[in-house]
Length: 185
Image (tube, rainbow, N blue to C red; front, top):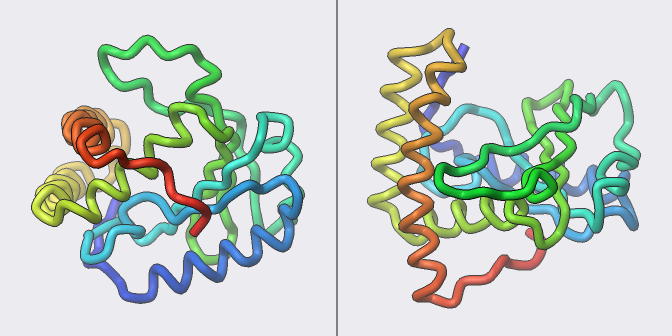
């Protein structure tokens, strides 16, 4: 079921706890860990799932992250969404994806310098800097969850293009402000 909840002040601390555990397990494989997604934007309503981006040097490092089973479950390698109008080669969108079995969290292992490694960081920072955009995005997610609580395909079929519109503005903001990806959280 898709449920959007009001922002929780506990999310940054929950991210920090999971990130500390990942750093201890991943050691030399991990270049950076970032809190991404809606739970990383203060005040933004979200699904109560912490998203973390683990940045690695290559896909072999992503596949060899020594996250303990049964706490972390590796899903199949997946590709991220390719925004409309972009012709990105598949390697720019590849990642390894893990879920936790305890506190709900998604771990996206992506390669440093790739399009999909930069994209969620820019999104997060844009929404942090633009509360009106964050509030509009929250309103859309809340309404989509109301309309499609059991239909993930329909939820994302609408949410992804809306997100792409917002990211077009984020790219302009990044160029105007000389934004660059921050160091590890």
